[in-house]
View: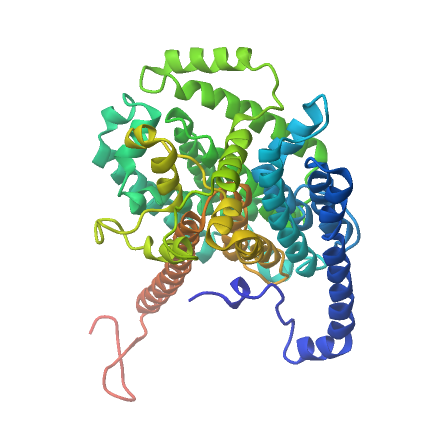
Length: 521
């Protein structure tokens, strides 16, 4: 069953101790956090004030940047800017989805202004920035040290735990689902079709493709377990090391088929899980990782142009794309996501039939397509069919950001609500869960995996985030069930071995009460 730690980021240390501590100190802390949140709410009013004074998008941009840093300054543990702190990580993810491109455009422009179209989009993005800043400030918690006595077995560190077997089994099941997906498409065809054709081939097979989420949880779990043992100065089980390495290598397959996200998000999940556990990662290493991720993304973008034409052609195309990139700061993905918001802000397409329709459809689309072939289309699919129907027929798609989806449903209020819900339920709260003192390793790994999708889903829509959450939830339940089966199996084998040793000793119990029988009969 689901552990309570997945739903609560603060766990009682002993019976009655939590209530006593809460009565003594929770109210002052809650009042202090409320005051700080109100200050950030007051700060959110600076955007309109600055825009009325400066105009041409400059006020919205400056206000956005203030809201970007506000949660880090109002952090419960004291002001700090660390890329993996939730108070920094979640607002930065939102900024990359809709704020990076206009800020870069403003800085690079000779007049230091935004166009009227960009200003309209920036005003919508500002509503989301205010929601994100308020949520991150209100939910900030003081980091807790992990309960190592519970999480790290010091008596037999090389022994495999039941949860170890459960997590590895989930990873193996995930690889099985991926293998089934490749078999349904055709292994030879996978390496001979283009990037868009691959998406078309995967259509309707999301349940099989979700196997990668199971693999990712297993990888993060293995790395977290190994790191916790290393931090305690204890040796690690060799099976865990080998399993983690093999599963990580399997993720590299996505690079071959033009997918850059799985490897990047897996690395980010590992970083978030380690940071939440209290293992500090140097900012230098984080900076190097960000640079590597940037150039890796550029290279994969170039390789996609020749996907299906052979590895040599893909590598040559990737190298050529890297050489032709004049400004590495001008990231095409960020620009395209923002341009979609610009179109929505100015053209106001009629993509929903009634307010909130895409939110309702987000849940309806969870029904597998083989069961419901005529299920509603996602908002991103409707958008690409409206703006580029020929591109849509060839498997192309455009990211419909949470900012744009909220605006299409309920205007500025819709953007505020959707970004606030995304930030609170799917990104910030999982990081609080991952940092809870008594959260188990599998809970920490699952929560970190969900939170790692912050940028990816701020640029996406509700339906895709719900699919990811359901997939990770199923993986978590499967890991817990398999760990329970491992525990029962281990105990059963131990009991059987004990019975056999008793039989070898010559003391077998006669089925009749009060009598014993000799081994020979």
